[in-house]
Every structure is written in structure tokens, then in C-alpha cells.
Image (spheres, rainbow over the protein chains, first blue to last red):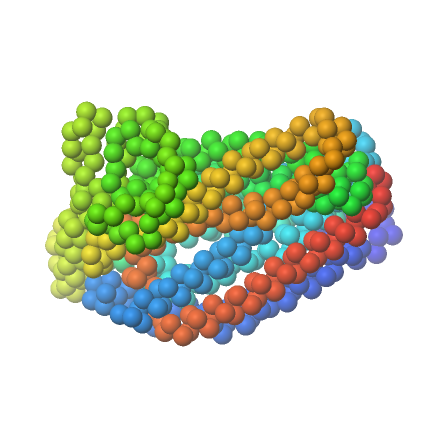
Amino acid sequence: MSSVPENNQGFWSRVFHLYYDGFRSMTVGKTLWLIIGIKLFIFFVIIKMIFFPNFLNTKCDTEQEKSEYVRHQLTDER
Amino acid sequence: MEELINVVDWSRAQFALTAIYHWLFVPLTLGLGVIIAIMETIYYKTKSEKWLATTKFWMTIFGVNFAIGVATGIILEFEFGTNWSNYSWFVGDIFGAPLAVEGILAFFMESTFIAVMFFGWNKVSPKFHLAATWLTAIGASLSALWILVANAWMQYPTGCEFNPATMRNEMTSFAAVALSPMAINKFFHTVLSAWTLGGVFVCGVCGWMMLKKRNLDHCWRSLKVGAWVGVIGIVLTMITGDTSAVTVAKYQPMKLAAMEGLYKGNHEQSIVAFGILNPSKQAFDDKDPFLFDISIPYGLSFLATHDFKAFVPGIEDIINGKSYDNEGNEINTVSYAERMERGKQLQEMLSQYSAAMNSGNTLLQDSLKNIINADFKHFGYAYLDKPEEAVPNVPLTFYTFHFMVTVGGFLLLFLLLALLFVYKPNILNKAKWAKWWHILAIITVPLTYLCSASGWIVAEVGRQPWTIQDLMPNKVAISDLSAGYVQTTFWIFAVVFTALLIADIGIICKQISKKSQTDLNTVKD
């Protein structure tokens, strides 16, 4: 992939090779990327989607309704 | 009511757990970022392969910590939306702006240049690579800046106006939010404490390698930078700690009183150097707050105001709204009972505002909005059942504050000693007790983490029961969830974050052990 001398490559090509060659030559980095992947999957797919919905979005459809809900919470409920 | 308290407690516990775990990763990124940038600068100047090897060694450790820690802070934002929805709505615009700047500018910058830092050794010029390393370190600090600005606003809400039509606080001055004295102090105190931690971490790892007699030249090179960054970090942390105390005394006097276990204030107030609190002490009883204490005369007056004679109010004075000038004249402040009364009037006005909105009476709306905003600093007191509810957990605040200060003093001595050994290595090389210093260096690493976490506990527990100082207590800020729901997610986070921490420590230790057995005076790509 890096057969063209780098000085002769365009900017985006050099950026691509920076990442491509960087990822290819990683050693401990591969383990780290695996951990990052698993972590992001747990955070965004499992935790966020199942356990952490936006509470107000589950109760109200519009911004106006959210204002009213919070007003009710702050003036009547507590 | 009991269910509500349970939800508040579990939500707070969950936030504390995730914030503290997140904070285990962040300071090392901030501290090591600066250290590797300095090391690479030395390499750039000297072209010495030894410095390149040393830079790459610490860069690997930095990379592991960064990779494991990245995105752990996003969990806190999940919690805002789910557990703290009233709070999130109430502050949305103000809290959103710094976090957006953080996400778009700082994190983008950090993550762009970190790729150049790791992948660009043979791809970009040495000068550009050095710039990328510095920009990674600066980006990490800028990232912290905006998070800390948001946190500082919760401690000292400023630069905003409450809009009763939307029930949100709206930013009136970005500069007032970003440059508030609380934000500036918090940023420098926090980031500089991270430099200290980075310096101590380098000393600790070198201590271990020296104990094993591995790569001693590399250790001395590392210690030279680590000790200097650590010493500069701890000295500046102490200076910013002093200015933070003045800011806290001015804007959060209850926190300062709790930090010192001070119930009845005085002029020429002494500071407790060491003390054991009386566990049964409550505000307004006649019991002595301390079972035992050693105090330094005038200390707290000076710490709080830089004036040895100044009056420092205690918990009971603050509740009663009593303070005094240097001539002993009473200064009229507002008692908590009165603040509760005024808060309840504001709450009532909000209901009237709602009725005026429904009837389309805009004149009444405008008038009520002005009245509400004029007295809004008392709004949160409407939700207190009694004035004493606004007193934070005194023992936890007191002990963590004193632990932080004591360990901070120890760190100064430890790092100065490390610096001495850097310039007089024969002292350590010839000493029979050298191995004890190496062991001390290793033990100091977890101690510094505890010190750092203690600082956050003082800052956050000390301002309870407020989610936003004086405007919104926790029990109003939280969502209408069941305690069981929050408990479940608490334990999920406890498991996930513990696994990440074990992975972090495991991989870092493995890398240190593995690399320490190679020759760190030459570079092997």
C-alpha cells in the first residue's frame, strides 16, 4: 500500500496512509482497540439504549410539554 | 418520601461512582501528556536516541491509559438525561454550551493529534510531530477546561437568567460562565494537581524499575522530567488551593465551614491541623465539635480571606444569617429560614406565572418574571423542609479535606526529595535505605490517586444538598424513577468500570514490566 513515495502522495492519501500503516503496525494497540470497541458497544448499545433513555423524551413529545412537565415537578410535586 | 430519599441516594452514589472511576483515568492523561511533550522536546533539541526511547516508553503508557479511559465520561451525560432530567432541563442551555465546545473543539483536537503522535514518527517531520504531541497535551487540558467550567457553574451559577416560560436558565454572558472565579480556580487547581499525579506516577514506575535494577539510565532521565513536573505541579496546586479557599469562603461559606468542622465562627479563627470530630455533634446543640484537635491560631481567617483578623462564619452563623466585619459590627445577611420563605414565595409566583401564561396575560408574566429573577438566588431553598437540611455531611467533608491537605504536604516533600536525588544521584545510589525510597515511590502513586479523589469529594460533598448551588437541591433535580431501577444500573456500572480499571492496571503493568526488560537506551520500532 505504501509503494508510492510519501512526498509524491497527495494530502488525503498521506492522511490515509498515516492511519492505515499506523493501525497495521500496532502491537499493544490492537488489544486496546478491541477494548475500546467492546467498551463503546457496551456503553452505547447496551447501557444507553436499554437503561439510559432520555427520561423527558419518554414522558413528553414536544419542548412545550417538557417545560410543563418540569414546571409541574418543580411547583406541585415536591 | 422514603422512596424519594432512596432514589436520591442511589442516583448520587451512581454519579459519584462513575465520576470517580472516570477521574482515575483523566489526571494521568493530563499529567503524562505534559511529561511526554517535555521529553520529546528534549529529544528534538538533543537528537539523543536515549531521550527518544524514553519518550516512546511513556507514550505507550499514556496510550494505554487514554484508550481505556476514553469515553468513560460519556456515562455521566447518560445519567444527566435519565437520572437527573429535571436538572438537565433546568440548566440545559448553560451546561450544554461548554460541553458542546468540549466535544467539538477540544476532544476533536486531542483525538486528531493523538493519531499523529502515535502513528506519525516516520510520516511527519520531527517538528510537526513535536507540535502534535504538545497539541495532544493542550487538547486534553482544554477538554478538561470546559467540563470544569460546567461544574464550576453548578457551584456558582452566574451569567444566566431564569426563563419561567420555558423553565430553563438561559445564558446571558458566556464570558461570565467561562471566566467565573470558581471556574478559573477549579481549572488550574485540577489540571495542576494532574501534573503532580503524572510526576508521582513517573517516580513510582521508576522506583519499581530501580528496585528491580532495570534500565537505570532511563529511570534517571524520566525522574528528571517527572520530578520537575511534579514539583511545579504540587507548588502551583497549593497556590491555587489557597485561591480556591478564598473563592469557596466567598461563594460557598457552608462548604468551608464543613471542611473545617466549624459550627460557631469567630474573628481570628484558628484552623484545625489535626482533629477527631465528635460523631454525635449536630448544629445548635451544645456539644463540642471535636473529641480532640490541634489548631493553628488565625489560620482559617487567613486561609479564607487573607486577613488574620477576619470573621469566618460557622455552620450555625450561616444558617442564622450572621456575619461580622472587622470592627465587630453585625453584617446583615439572610438567614436560611428567610431564604426558605422567599423560595416558597418564588415557587408560588411560578404557579401564578403558569396561570398568567394560560390566560395570555403578558403584562403579569413580565412583571412576575422580573420579580422571580430578582430573588432567584433563594429559589432552591423552597424545597428544604428545615434549615439544617442545607448542611452537608460534615465528617466526610472534613476528613477528606484534611486527608487531601496532609497528602499534598507529603507530596511536596516527596517530590522535592526526588528532585534532590536527580541532581545528587549518589545520595540514593550509595544509601542503604535506597530501596525504602523506591518502595515509598511506588506506594505514593495510589496515595496520590486517593488524594485527587478526595479533592473531588470535598468539592462535591461539601456543596450538598445542592445540585446547583442555592437553586436546585438533589431531591428536586432527580427524575421520577424507582430506586430499584437506579440500583440496577449502579451495579452494572460498578462491574463495567471495575473491569476497565483492572484492564487498565493490568495492561499498564504488563507494558512496564515487558518494556523494562528491553534496552531503553535505544529505539526499536
